[in-house]
Length: 140
Image 1 (cartoon, one colour):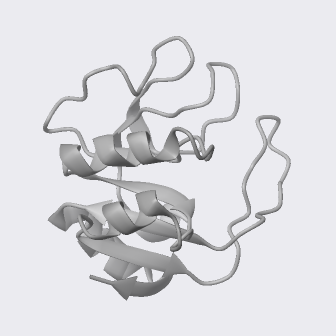
Image 2: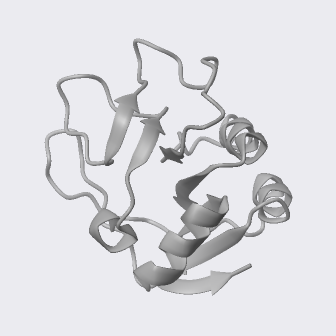
Image 3: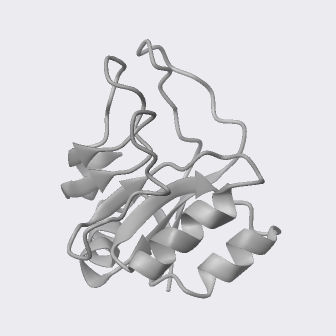
C-alpha cells in the first residue's frame, strides 16, 4: 500500500512498540512509551496512523487527526458509526480500498482483514497521494 501512496510521513503516532515490525514510512514514531494521543503533534507534520480500532477510542484518535488537518488514517470502512459520519464530513478525501487489506502481525506474518478498509485523508498532499495511488474509489 505505501509503495502505491508514494509519500513519506513525518509521524506515526500509533506505532507498534520498538523492536517489532514497523511498516509505515515515517520519520518519527510514537508508541507505548509515548502516548500518541496525548502527545502534541507539530502542526507541520504529515501524520499517518492506523489507530486502535476499539469503539471507545477510535473517534478520539480520528478527531485529533481531523483537527490536525494534515495526514491520513487507515481504518475499517464503518460508514454506519457515529465517528465515521463525523470524520467523513471533515475529511478532504476518502479512498475505499478495493479488496481486503492484508495486515501484518508484530512478528511479520500476515493477518486477515475482517472488514473493508478505507484511507481517510486530510490536506492537499495526502489527497493527491490517494488519487495517484489508484488503491480504490475516491470520494471527496
